[in-house]
Every structure is written in C-alpha cells, then in structure tokens.
Amino acid sequence: MTQQPTLGGSGRWSLRGFSITLRDDRMKEKQQMRGLIITIVTVAALVLPAWAQRIEVQKPDPNRIVRVQTALNHLTVIEVREPVITVAAGSPAFKIEWRENKVFIQPTEADVATNLFIWTASGRTSYELEPAGAVDEMHFAIDEPAPSPVPAPTTAVKPSSPAATGVSASEVLLNSKPIRTDGLKTPKNRVIVLLKDTFQDDANELFIRYAVRNGTREAYTLSTPQVVAINVNGASYALDSLPNSQLTESAAAHIEAAGERPIEVVAGKLRSVRVEPGQETVGVVGVKLPTKGNAQTVLRLIFPRDAQGQPTATMVL
Image 1 (cartoon, helix red, strand yellow):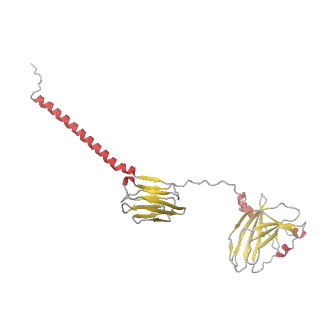
Image 2 (image 1 turned 135 degrees about the vertical axis):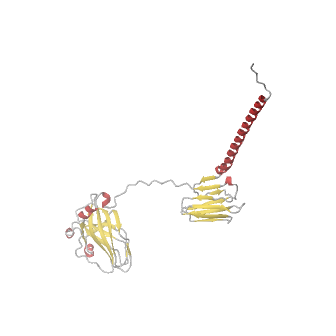
C-alpha cells in the first residue's frame, strides 16, 4: 500500500529550506543592485562636475571685458591667437604666467577679485578675474578662435620682365643689342650712368640694362629712373648715324628738340639701391615704346639727384 506524503516531519523542513534559499537569493540581488547604484552615483559624482566646468571660445574684442571664474588649487588657461608680449594684473593674489600664446592663471587667496590685461602684436584684451569659487563653476580654459583665412585678391598681373612674357633667358641674351658708347667720357667726382644693352619683346616693350657708377665721396641712393622721349625737330641726319648709341653730354645738349614727353615705365629692377663711393651697381628698366614718327627716337633716363646735380643718360634707338 502506497503511503501519501505529509506536511509534517522532514517535509516541513524541506519547504522551510526552500524558503530560506529564496530569501538569500533575493538578498543577494538587492545587494548587487545597491552596489550597482552606488557605482553609478559615484561615477556621476566624479563626472558631473567636470561637465559643469567650462571651456569657452571668445572672439577677441578690445572693447569688451571678459569675466573669468577661477577656483583655488586649480589652473585656468587663456589661449590667444598670437604670442603674448606681456601681461599685467591688479593684484598679487593671482599667480599669472605666460608661455608663447598661453596665459596661466591660479588664485592664491579666496575672496579677491582683480583685472587682467594681455598684450599681443594685434592689441590688448581685458579680463575681470572673479574671486575663487566652486570648482564646478570655474573656467578650465578660454580660447580665441583661429582667424578665418582671407582669400588672396585676384588681380591681373602685368608682365614685369621679358621672362614674364614667355621669353627665355637665352632668347634675351641672343637677341639683345649692345649700346654703343663711342666718345663717351666719364668725368670725375660725378655719378655716371652707362647704358649697356637693350632688348625688345613682341609687346613693343623695350628693356634697357644700365650701370650706375658712384664717383663722389658720398653714398648715392637711386631708384628706377624716369624715362622721357625727346621731341626731335624734323629729321636729324646726325642722329640717323648713331643708332643704338648713348650720346655724350655735349651731343645730347645740341639736339634740336621741341620739349619732351614722359614714357610709360612697365618694369624696373635694381641690384642695389645704395651705391657707396667708388662702387657700381646695375639695373634694368622696361618702357612702352612710343609711336615711331619720321624722326629718330631719342630716350632720356633721368635718375635721382645727387650733390652734384641730376644724373641722366640719353640714347638713340
């Protein structure tokens, strides 16, 4: 005969043991949940203040005062666009140092406020340093945004030399014409201009290479010469026999002319703008050739004055 189980005896102990086991499991789950909650709260307590601390970007404005929140035992950094030249603060209660374009600020006392000035090559910026407060309200850093790049203006560039017009250096040397200096004398104690050679390109521009020799006792400062065309009266057979020549001072003075007109200078370059006594320099000037008439074209290069007068050089094309 089969015996039915009862709730007494060992059966009661089995139910009680199951109940105790279930209770222990629930206690472990609660403890684990408490541990998880404590972990989350701890992490939040550590992270949230860092979120509250500020890193700001301020555009430089010399007419504005920027307020800076600080905290004891903490560093605030101001980073500007350019290297810092110098700084000045109104109170020693703040320790202030700078390196390159960064300024480091640390309060050393509580309840003290002051002002701060930072100078760069572009000017001055002004700040108000607030009394040291809570860490979660302080400025960690104040940065100035990088300036936006300014696009370069697009302008038409005028050719300034034969090379700029597509002419090679070898073509210039092969096609240049030496300037004759027959009978030319070089007086002493004067600034002398000697014309060397010319080159004409396809754009009807003439480039003249010249040398400037300083025979005086003082340094001579020169610049690209002014160029004029001599208005020769009628045909001059004497000039027709002197093509591509530099005229002597006497020959230039005897030209029958009806005034002169300026010629457009399209290029100019000097090896040196200062010539010491006894020294020489060279230069090139490019001009737009005038319309050729019946008479021979005569050009005169006029240089800056020296103590003795106005150095010039006259040539026949």
